[in-house]
Each structure stands twice: as structure tokens, then as C-alpha cells.
Length: 481
Image 1 (cartoon, rainbow, N blue to C red):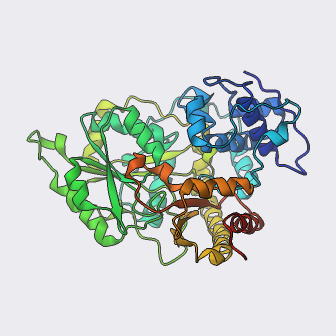
Image 2 (image 1 turned 120 degrees about the vertical axis):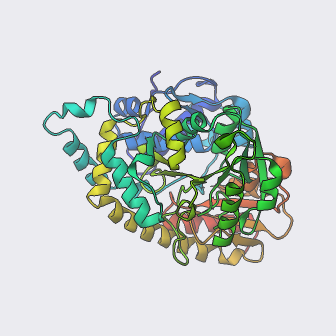
Image 3 (image 1 turned 30 degrees about the vertical axis):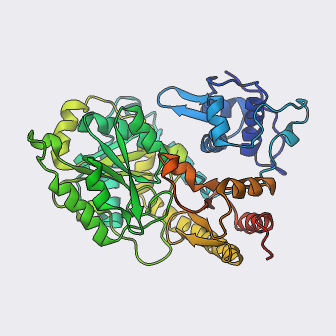
């Protein structure tokens, strides 16, 4: 499918937003139907004569808001209408309006506090361009041959070195598997663990991981959390033998799991060995998703749970999506030694889903010190945005309790006055601001007994946009500032 999208110079509106708004309008007016396949980001970029990062940013925003779905190995598709209604209540799907009045038909979302965004204005484009040229210098034919199924050895060693130095992860390069996105690696992991497992997940949680487990046929047990993270007693009662946790910065609550709770979870995992009477088949495991541990604003970073593991009970999952860019699509899995034999027997024949070219570019980015410099720069940028947000929301203290502010790139505002979450979101939307309800991250909505809470991401906003967005929210929520 081709898309004819009229673009104007980005002086008034960024190109990615023009693309995003046009596709939204096409969906709303029926020009694009549920199930229609969109062109790839590369094809669309070539067609519109823009950079691929521009089209990727537009698609990422559409994904975040539920307008489109991404299917591994197939591409991007328009989401089902009922899913759109659930994801964007009040968005006006199917409303009547003349085609020429495109702009008024789309809600005037001046500020989007998406928790999934990142700051792509600070992406090191020149460096990435240089490394891309270096990779293809002298007609390097080897880059176009199939490579190591686990990922290129040099890249895996660079990842190992980074994880050991920055996160305290103890592993060899042979324990690392590189894949295109965490969803793919979780599907690959299912081949190693087997399908006769019960998965426990923190509640609320990262819903995309839940969708993967559910689609694979696993029974999933939501486990409530206290102030320290997943409750070990409830975990034991769940009957699960695999627990998916985010100890460094739980999404979406922002809880940083203390060392004592980490030890409790490790004891739970260790106690499960051989309980089913069939040897290792009933061993318990913890899947540690360390998705954005690079960004912390108070105290020293807490080492990964995997570094505390002495009995091979932690499966470590990481990604470069948050710290570099979502379009990089490079994630990695660190398997315990005893699972590597099962991996080679049951899943080792799967070819790596990341091209050797992209792997080589990322390897150079890590090995030549660019990643460390980029990360230091992003920490400073996000810290400035974090501080701007915290200063801006201070007048809201009477109405909201602020949490999750010590790490990551989003915070939570929990209402003190009993106002419904849907009402807060609707008032924000009427003021031109998009915020996200915590209730949407619960596996089963009826399990949400918390006061109304909204999630504010700030990575993709400038400091000026952050201040303007909070000013609009304060007005919408009847606060004088």
C-alpha cells in the first residue's frame, strides 16, 4: 500500500506529526480500514522523501495510542475499531466532517505526555551515519551473509562488558542472545522454558509482555504489589513457577525494588527446584526486565537482580530502545548456564532477527565509546526535563500525590479528592493535553482498587512543552498557579 500524505515545511508542525495526524484522520474517516497493511517505515520514508527516523516516530506514536498494531515479520496494520474505541475514548472515531477540514477533526492535542516516548531530537544522527558508512566500506560482502544465530560475537561481548560494568550482570558472551525486540525474545524464551508453565506478573504491569505471554497460551497470574514491589507471599500462593518482574524501575508504578525484596524473590525461585518430581522441569525462574535502568535521579543505581543470583534462577532481559531509539529494535536476553543447553537443543536453530549490518553499527557504537557518551548526555537531558516537570507540578500537591519520580522517564499523579480517572483524562483532553490512566495497565481492570492515577511521560517533550502542558492541566483540573 502507498500513502499519499501532503507535507508542508516543518516550520509550524514537525513532519512526523503531519504523518501521524494524516493517518489518524484516514482511520477516523474510513479511508484506512481495520486490518489494512501500512507501508514499512523505510518504504514510506522513501516515498515521502523524508528520513526513516521521521516515519518511525510517526508509527511509534500511532502504536502508543493504539491506532495501529505491529506484527513480527509482517509489518504494521490498522488496529481493530473496538480496540481503538477502548484505547482512545472520546477520540471521535467515525465522526462526520468534510474531508477538507482535516485539522479541526483531530483533537487539538497540543501536549502528549506519552510514557512510551523518548527524546529523538538528541539522537546522534551524525555518528550513526558515519558508523553506517564504515560498516559498508569496501563492499563488505560478509555483512550480507547469515551470521551467528545468537547474534554477532563482537556485539555480544560489547553488551556483556557494558552489563557487567554498568549493571553488575555476571555472564559470558555465550549466554547472550540478541533479537529484534523484547517480544521476539519472550517468544524465543517460551521455546526454552516450555509451554507448561504458569507466569506471575506484577499488577499493574507492562501490558505488551502480558499480551505476548497470553498469546503463547500461558496462564498468567496477576500478583499485587506493596511499596517494595511484588508480594512474595502472594507470589507463592499464585502457583506460578516463572515470575516476570521489573525490579530496577517497575512499569508503570515506578517502584524501585529494595535489596531485601530482591532476596525474597530469589529465595522463592531457589525453593522451587525439583518440586514437581521431574527434575529440572519444575525449576522456578525470575524474568528480570531491565528496560530503563540507565536513568536514575536519586541515589546510586541499584545493581541488577541477576548480579545477586548465585544459582542460575534469573533470566535477564534488556533493550536499547529507551536509551538509543525504538527503531534500533535490538534487545538481548541473558540465559542462565543451565538453560543454554535447552536453548541450543530447542531454539538454537532460529536465525537472529537483527541484520548483521545493524548489529555491526551498534557494536561500533558501543565499542568505540559513543554509547557511553550518548548515555551521559541523555542522562543530563532527562534530568533537566525531570527537574522542570517536578517544579511545574509542585502547585498540584494539594490535589495529587506524586510518585515514581526517582528513576525512569515518567511520573504518576494520584488523586486525593476522589475525582474519577476517566474524568481527569477527559478534562485534560479538553484542554489539549493527553495523559494516560494507570487503570489501563492492569491485567484485569477489576483488580484496580487504587485512587485515580494518571501517568505523565516527559522524554519526548521539551522543557517549555512540559511547563506549558502542566499549566494547561492545572487549569483543566481547576488549580490556580
